[in-house]
Amino acid sequence: QVQLVESGGGLVQAGGSLRLSCAASGRTFSGYAMGWFRRTPGKEREFVASINWSYGNTYYADSVKGRFTITRDNAKNTVYLRMNSLKTEDTAIYYCAARYSGGYTSRPDGYNYWGQGTQVTVSS
Image 1 (cartoon, rainbow, N blue to C red):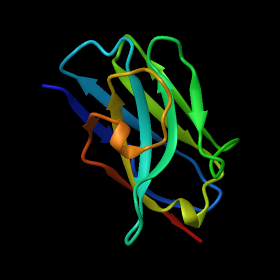
Image 2 (cartoon, helix red, strand yellow; image 1 turned 90 degrees about the vertical axis):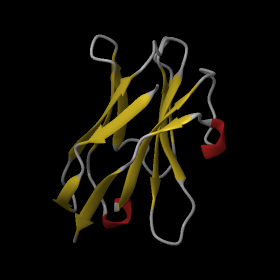
Image 3 (tube, rainbow, N blue to C red; image 1 turned 135 degrees about the vertical axis):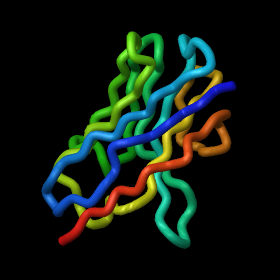
């Protein structure tokens, strides 16, 4: 069974940084796309970033471009989201997701597996 386990969330002041991790297990993820999404109360799940596991192509939402960086470590089967210059509006539950097809999509329904999420709170 595919498992995605997020970690690294927490409370940080505006302007600070956090690094989220997503440990993936249960199969080989070669060819998959891995994504990060976030959700705030009353809103739909929002695309943040994605990476193709094999080729390393990355995509970002405009709201995080230049501040967030998605990377993967093949040896550790782990995807990371480095978040710099955090803003209060980045406060959300952050989810890791995996997609069979390695192609890009920002649609949550394009992803096949999801983690449980990790809370990120940015204080002013």
